[in-house]
Structure formats: C-alpha cells, structure tokens
Image (tube, rainbow, N blue to C red; front, side):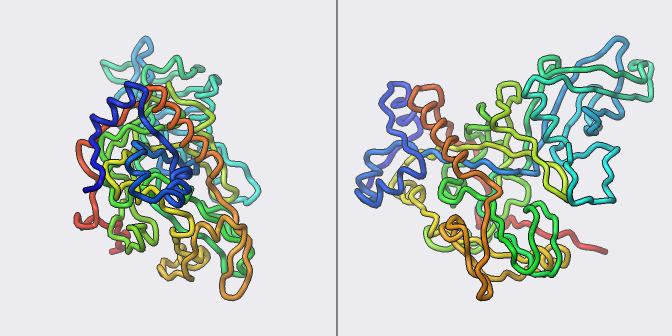
Length: 398
C-alpha cells in the first residue's frame, strides 16, 4: 500500500518543526530523479503560487458613522464609485470600477485608467484617499453629505473578497484581424503579431490539484501577502471542461472565491493595474499549500509546463462574435519559450502574469509552513467537480 497522511498528522509535524515542504517547481525534479513513491514518502506539503491580473476582485468596507449619521446612497473613493446597496455605511469597491469622469466612450488606447484596483493599492501603501458620500436623509440618518480624507487605518473593516480568482488554466490570446485590438488580455497586434497568456502553469494552484481533492471551502491560503481563505467556488467555475493527462483541463475550468483581511495584506501582492484601451484591474498574489495525502496527490503536483495545454483563441473574432472556435492548443513550455507557431507563422509570446513572483509566493508560503506560522485546514466542503453538472453558461438574449 502507498503512503497515507491526514491533515492532523501534517499539522503536528508543522508544529514540531519536522514538516517537509517543497514548492510545485522543486517537486518536479525530485520526482524525475527519485520517482513518485519515494518523494511521496518524504514530502508532506507542496506549495503553489500565482501572481496575475484578476478582474473579479474587490473589497468590502465599513466606514463607521459620522456625527450626525448618514445613510450613504453613493460613495466615491478617489473619485471611483463604490456600491452602497448593503447598509448605511458599508460599501463594496470593485477593482474594475472607473471614476465617473473617465471618458468611457472614447476608449482612447493610450490612456492610463485609474480605478478600483489602484484605490486598494493606495490604501495598502498608507496613502490618504479622498472620501465622498451623499445620502437622501432619513429621521435616523439625517446627514446628506460628507467629504473627507481617510486612510486604511481609519476604516473599521476592510475585507478583500474576490468572487473569481486563480483560474485553472486559461486562453492564449491572439488577433487574426488587420487592426490592433485592446483587450483584458492586453494589446494584441494585428495579423498574429503577438500572443498573450496568463497563468503560472506548473506553479498555478488549481493545476496542482486538478480534481479539487484538497482545495475547497475553508482552505487557508496566501492572499495578497496575508492569510486568506477559500470562501466558495468562484464564479464561472466550469469543472466539466475536457481534460488531458493526469486530469489537467484543456481550457479554463475551476475558479475559487477568496476572502481575507485587507488590513494585514501588502501592496507588493495587490497591485492596481491598467490595461490600455480596456480599463483597470488588480494584480493579485495568491498561493495555496497542497497536502500530500497520498501518492496520487504527489503525482498531481509534479505536473510540468510541457504537459499543460491551453487553447489559442482569436480575440478579434471569438470575443465579439462568441464563435467559441479555437486555433489549436499550445503547452506552457512552448509559451514560456518566447515564441509559438500558429498557421505556419512564428508568433512572439508574452505573459500577463509573473512567473518569478509566483515562484516567490510559493517560497514565502513554504517558509511560513516550515517556521510553524501557517498550518493547513481541511475543507469543510469540496468544490463542485465534473459530476456536479455545474457549467459556465452564456447569457441568453430574449
């Protein structure tokens, strides 16, 4: 029989300072040299990491009551609107939100877009944020306007809550048209002038646990430089995507919703980001430990870039038109080489996510575990798998 471990056994080893932890990058060469069985007997935890733009992110804030009190009907933070339909002084700031004075209709390709993601980064940097709110006035909330400057320390609660992060695989984006296009996958040059991708590949969390055996609701994670948790499966969670060898999905599959205390996070790992001609977002640092419960889990974590394939998608056609057709599939090893071949043409590639930063996150998480600062949590519920029937469906027009 192969090795079997429990979360309790691994946590006891963490507390005793005897745990063996390696990153998802380090485990690859170990398996190649020693084999799955021997490494599974030795290694207790494998750490993963990713650092890339994650548009479905944002933060809940409670600003506290001024005197007299106000029921905030509209809120602006550095000119960026936050959603207020929650309670009197609560709001949610989405990282894609843009200031109301932003010329949304001009879509000028060369324009820097300051948005919600930049507000979150500025708060973490300790900067003062211009805060404005208006209300319609009630007997219990008579005030109708407030304008002031606040810092993160002035806010009662600041909770990062990201409805969709850490996509399990994603597209390689190209442009077959004869004009430059501006997308959330960056500026795509005409006539296959470039190709963009956005995944840490062999370091990416959900690619190291393809069937969600250890990543589920309640999983403790590295989030934005602090500690967070998996709160639910993410929006557009799509576990029914066809899979290749070792369970690796052949396109965008699982996602996770994550939560954590923004006040104990770091601007190094939550960076406001602007895409030319598209808008603002937040680049998020996220890492998840994978407990090696048995040999199968070790085998999953030894996945290599050359074994992970993503679809090549023409964003000039598939996105406006929604054809869903792909131009082929390419491995992350090929993408990271700096060039791929599409329709007989050599196309330069570039990542939107940072592999060196993903490696750094995996190593930070590894150090936290080795130092006894971070223990593992067993999920209270698994993420929906392929047998759940959950799929990401298009919006139907009537």
